[in-house]
Amino acid sequence: MKQLRALTPEELARAEERLRNPAPGSRIEAAQKYGIDLTLLISHLRRTPAERAREMHDACRVVEKYRGAAAKQK
Amino acid sequence: MMNFEALVQALVDAGVEFVIIGGWSAILQGSAYTTEDLDICFARTSENLRRLARALASYHPRPAGMPKDLPFVWDEVTMRNGTVFTLDTDVGRIDLLAEVSGVGTFDDMKSTAVNTEAFERRVRVLDLKSLIKAKRAAGREKDLRILPELEALLEAQEP
Image 1 (cartoon, rainbow over the protein chains, first blue to last red):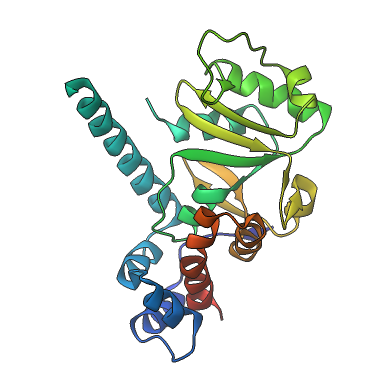
Image 2 (cartoon, rainbow over the protein chains, first blue to last red; image 1 turned 90 degrees about the vertical axis):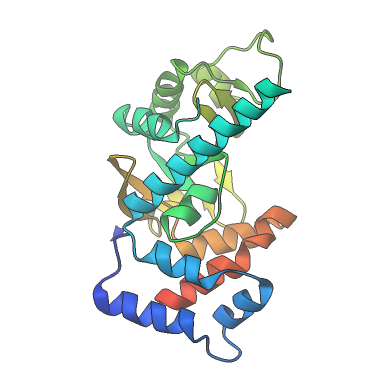
């Protein structure tokens, strides 16, 4: 089974270059035009899958906490 | 309180055969998408249904959006009688699917899914190409909205 792991320095450099300078007509350029923040993708690709999960998990819990606090104030 | 890590760990520790699909699959592969549930595709063998039912039981699963006092029995028989379950648990919402549009069943996913370390466990995750297929096949607005980002991630990581 294939492994999903952190990108190697070479893979990351290639991905960053593509995301910083989208080729005309590319899917990356289309995403940029659609409104996707490509710098955000770069920062996520710099992390390991476990770090991506941890960060999002923590963010979800913070959102839930504030949502709960806001609901109590109503 | 929401705790997807606890859900994933419970499933893995119980030996459940599953693939993480949906939003968490996107997140693990670099997406900035946010999600409020955990979606998994599970194997429909009797043993796996038994393990899945047991793994989630301590988190008191119940049909999402239904009153808490609605009678609901969570066991392998319930699981055998359905293929899609959207459940609220004590630690967050979980969607259990026996089959995913555009991709197929757990067995179909086994050859393309990727293995990774997340939530302090080894987990199987739907690969990016299959996730794109699934989102396109689902065709709902919320599925289509994430496609440009997934396509960009795929292109950025192509050899």
